[in-house]
Image (cartoon, rainbow, N blue to C red):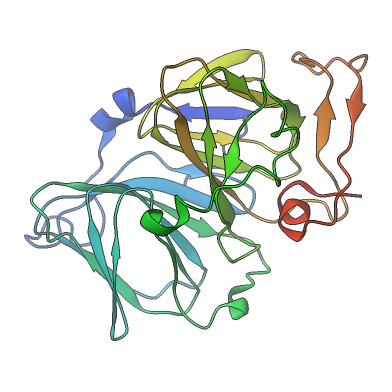
Length: 286
């Protein structure tokens, strides 16, 4: 396992990391099992990496001691979980609880890309699931809502959230942000992984700007203030996922303006109070 990424933000641009494919996975040299992985991102409660599965290749069956979320990025994969077959395409999100044997194959004519996110939390709430859970894009694209995202009803901050994955130990959702909109500045009390699906979204954080383009990954450490904006000509679509809130009872901090880096203690802050269970699991709430 790679060492924990200690910087407040780690951006893996696909334009660069696509040249860093590593074909050293078990039996990956054998025909039928060819597959590559890209640089790993390590948070406090999860690890993640992009995987490429070429046409007519497969991933051998595995049984993980921890729950895994698979995020479809490009192409199509067929997962086999017991007697069940589940097809995962772009923007689909599959949660597989721990202890469940599973494998996948690419029966298409092009390579597939997917992100594997594995929890490292001591408390893996996989017992909440009796089997695999799929969030298919063709269904959830009709289920975006703005209510869970602070200030999202205000023009200038418009953005939408899709339904969340079912486990608190690997809690994620797809976010859609229209053009010329931006999020408020905020810091979340848990590490977050961002996977860019389509469009471009510019993140401002830790004294830098990161432009996320399709297939990019980014790890943001807990409590790092950030804001994201869409200055493009089409909606931006990304998936973000993280583990449990690191310190029980800790809540997200919202800033009245850019807090700078290091954080300027003179910048005004506020908290969001809500009874929405999904919001409380993601952001914390008093």
